[in-house]
Image (cartoon, rainbow, N blue to C red):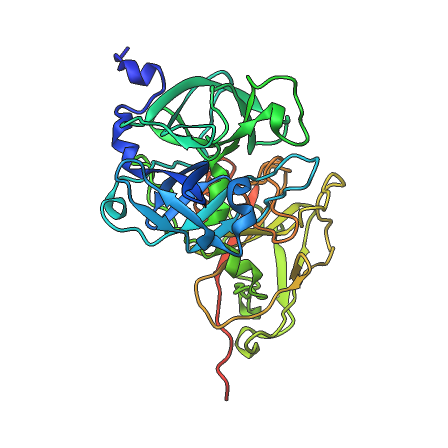
Length: 415
């Protein structure tokens, strides 16, 4: 059995000090003093991560906050604050998806410092050892530590049985540590959110159990993987996801009539799905609404996804639809013309792809505890993970899956 280093056994990065330059404090100036509101860390160029509850009151006035890097002493004004699309904070209730991305124009040495390593879709066993690395604050003021301090603890499991995002741990972190990155070995696996005893909606009589949010939640903020072990994906995610969703339209791939009978199938010929659109593909105009109808020829389970270089959506079944009735019936017409309350519209930009997956067993690439956002239909992971899972299904059960992908055409030019 290969020998492991002491840090590896303790689940600490090999050299915690190498990440010191990427660690920061969120600071609010009060007179001639600074109040430390929470921790932050560099996850991508000009992008820092912290907890949503640390900065949500300043979304419209981000310049009121300052980010200070203890390693260099540099201070920066925050240009933009983007909360997680599913962030929820209500009085008397648990703060959900408690994370935010901060946009800052970094200079040396922060602009070239090593970002914290992020790796998605990584399983962490219950009771696994975790570590936190940060410049701690005490009662809202700075420590005099010249190096980042490491804390060791354990992952206690999910907050709820079917919730893969909201997690529990027992690292001895204090007020002011919200936003601290939690490591499992060499990569960040979660973000510390606070003591459970002080979190609304829990009110547990102890501060030994604490809340964290899975690092996978950063996918919805457009943060790409940065861990050295990552494999090339479908392209880097960019922090434009929220603007993309809220801009009022989607660039969706459109199946033309000529694609109808071009399914590449490895299963029985009758295991097919007819696809029809309300217009030929070259007749749609910019921003025109479109409708797609799927008609399976046999009983099966149908899943429709949209992906581009930025995000992945599940268009069918919608988040609140239940499929226990047996999926789609032979001859049933499935009409897809919206995501949430928004109609599907054509856009002139290229890059989107529709993925239609038909299965003869209920084993979709998206797990039961990974439901898309109810309003935006955005999946809790990116295109890379979705496409890898579809490929795995095709490899493991080639006779039980029908998969077709079509590049998104653009709208017809104005005459």
